[in-house]
Length: 136
Image 1 (cartoon, rainbow, N blue to C red):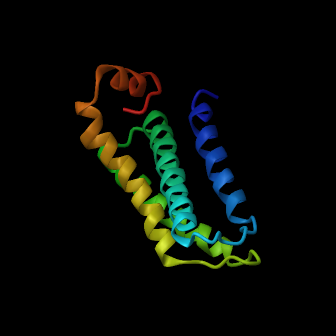
Image 2: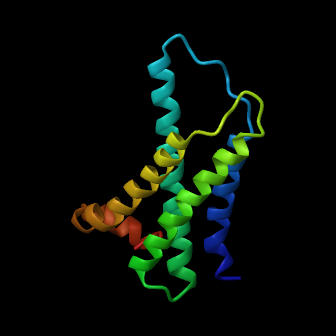
């Protein structure tokens, strides 16, 4: 039961992403680039969060090395992004795009970079938060 508490948030967030990809999209606004920027930023953020949640679950429930865990989770993020795009192909008004898979992977990559490059140099409060959340 102790291990499952780490996987529940990751599974929930993956479910949220799956649910969103099944929704029909509203027509684009007259400001195409504004609409585009919001949607692609959402892709980055949702997959960065998924990376952190899956990474947290993996390092707290297995004996895998943290660097290998990060690589594994990154690959998972890209594959999940690809499966998300495939899922969208069944939703009226939506279509799969390789660009979105790349953006999803970039979200995971940003989270990975933040963990390995920024967090060690971050203010003590942020380091303590990561420690308390058992992310690092």
